Each structure stands twice: as structure tokens, then as C-alpha cells.
Image 1 (cartoon, one colour):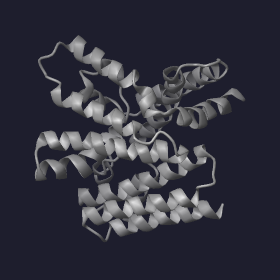
Image 2 (cartoon, rainbow, N blue to C red; image 1 turned 30 degrees about the horizontal axis):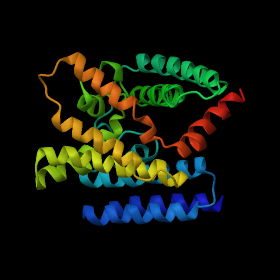
Image 3 (cartoon, one colour; image 1 turned 90 degrees about the horizontal axis):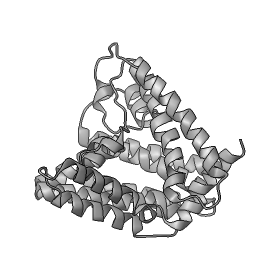
Image 4 (tube, rainbow, N blue to C red; image 1 turned 180 degrees about the horizontal axis):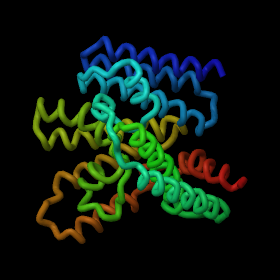
Length: 293
């Protein structure tokens, strides 16, 4: 248990450092050093627990970098809830005046997705040799569209104007739309502020967009391949491939073509994003815990 305390202490120390240091390179290097420390602290832990700890500390570290790049001034309480009690990466809603907001639709959607995802997950857990996509969808439905939507409803009920982080990916208008407006908006918010804007300012818009995908791949290496210590390079290949497609994607392409291409490119090479060992040690492990029920 003491090891988990050390990991959280590292994350909190980095968060404090981000409030004092304004050099983005120092912060990025510091983040990598911190993740390396967490990696070695939990080296003997099971892959699932390693993933949870590495992702938790990485999330806190990226919050620190985002807050530094944002440059606003959250008070200590709002800085705390933004960092530890919200998965999004846009601080602005927590800096605004609280007001009455709609939240019931998000709450109902969250409950439905959570229950359907759990039920589907239990069903899939009892299947033999289920395909990766079929295993991933129920977990995503329960967590991304269920629990996170309920968290959205909670903060909106408190008067903080956060928005859903996951939206219907099946109506995306292309691969760029999928990643920037549909899937995991917390990640796209984070990448836009910490990678795309600085790189675009230094080089060009296209370079900024491509850098987002490359860095996304590297960060997913930390969250996926590092915990299981297998499949290195595959998540980076997955996102780099998507980055290249986004660069050549055109607005005048037929909508059906862009949507079909996007969904196919996201789903078909999913084993690159989730290598075999991660699938078995994390995804199948999680489903097996559901199977107990």
C-alpha cells in the first residue's frame, strides 16, 4: 500500500511543480521522469494495477501541463476538483461563475449506458474467443458513455458547464471529426492545448495536426504497452497512420465515404492499439471480473 502512496505523492509534487515552472520542456521531461519512477515502483504489480497507477499519475501530470499552458488562475478548490474529480482537460468551465444548467438528460443517458454496458460485458465475458471489438464495446459503453456521462451530469447539476467527453462516433463526418469532436474530447482538448498550438505556432498547422497524432501514440504507449511491457510501437503506429489519413482527408469527399473510412480505420486495426498481451491481461481480466456477477 505504501507504494501507491509514493506514486500519488509523485503526482501531487509534479502538480505543484507545474504551478511554479512555466517552461513546457521542463514539464514534459519531468512528466516522463515521473512516469519512469511509477513504472519501477510498480514493476512487480499485476498489469491491470500497473495500468491503473500509470494512467492515474499520467492524468494528474497532464492536468498540470494543461493548467500551465492555459495560464488561468483557478483557486485551490477548483484546481483540486478539476484535477482529481473530472476527466476533462478544459479548465475554463471551472473558472466560470456557477449557473443553473440542464443535467437530467446526461444522467438518464449515463444510467442507461452503464447498465447496458455492464449487461453486455457480462454476456461477452461468458463467450469463448470473443473478438476484440466485441470485448471493447461493452466496457467503453459502461465507462466512457455511462460513468463519465454521470460525472458530467453531476458537475452540471453543481452549475459547472462541463460537456460530455464522448459523443456518438457512428455519426462522425470523417476521421478528423471522430478524433476532434466525437471520441475522448478530454484527450483532444489536452492535445490541442499542449501540442497542437505550440507546434503550429512554431512550424505550421499541418505539422501541428500530425504532431498531435504522434504524441497521442506515444502517450498511449505509456498507458497500454508499458503496463504489460509488450507490443511497444504498435499504438504509435496506429495513431501515426490515422494522422496521415487526416492530413489527406478532404472536405469535399462524400460523407458516406469519410464516415465509412473513419469507422473502418478506427475498428479494423484495433489490435494495433490494444496488443495481444494488453487484451488478455487488462481487457479480458476486466471482463472476467464482471463474469463473477
